[in-house]
Image (cartoon, rainbow, N blue to C red; front, side, top):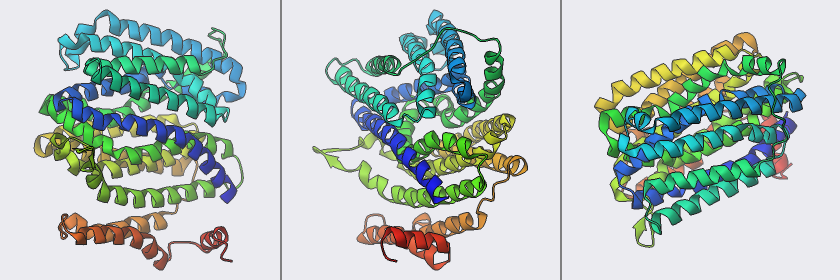
Length: 478
């Protein structure tokens, strides 16, 4: 068991280097934007990229997942899947490019910004045709090449953003030009060995697997990005800008969930038929929740200090965006629930019950949309993260219940509950506001909670004998 988990951890770390590095480089743009863009301008950027993220699901329509499922016949599967995506991406982008003013007005950003729709059409095409080569790198266990391309592409994006905005004063248009160039680099850099073909036997297999994932993908992405367009309609561009800047502070939890997901899917697919695999899957979830709960507490406690950190006489995030800091803890733990959902997908995917994923994500999307419309008028920018939290809870519950029927995994519910109860008990003083955030007692309390969390779990009997023994062996104490 520990050998398999180490293998997952190794590839997670390598993929994580690219994911963490790329996202952190991209994260550096957020403080930069807060100092060079007004909240309303940043709100427009956030809204358009939300649309791009949503439309990416249409452009890719699950073909990367289908290719991974039929990887055993990789040559025929790749050429067919890539040819299909190349053709459809071209059609979709052409539709956007032929009427940019119409789409800009429909999206709520105003027809005067139609040029941004053209940039979005190019970005969508480039990202769409690149998803399969990246999937091929993952299934071929080439994480270092994967990481190198991702890191260089994002580095190029960051540099171009800074140059185009500061030196050429291109404003938000410079952001989209930088994304076009960096996406083009990724397309050129990732190897593609294919012949244009739509194999009559392979294409139906790929589509039969992929298309049921389309509603699921749309639902999952709606949970992640639908809040920006709704917030734009209900509260305006400036509110979206403030929300986006603070939402991005949850990047550290997003990074861990993303890097885990990159390695998790190949991991459980390759081990699905091995003896004892279900116990490994259950243990992975326990360790995942344990680590990310501790991290979520730490980030919730210290991100406000990071935001106010002075660099060259300026705060990391411009003070005009600080009003949204209250959403950060909710965003962090919403993504923790999302990570649990990612874990719980394994039984569903192994059993090939993709309709369950569709039902789960569409249920989450419905909850997200309803909660956003209900909470934003009353709570403002605090509404969307709570809507996401509720949506991810619904999605996780649906796949958990279905997974027990199709591919039972003995998840360690008692241990998971103990993690949650311990964390909540230790954080009661912070949640209740009993400690003044401006005093030295606040620092002492935060450090004490982080140290006490594993100690309390140890005292409560959370750790199993074999886990204690493994720790002793690693520390050379036995």
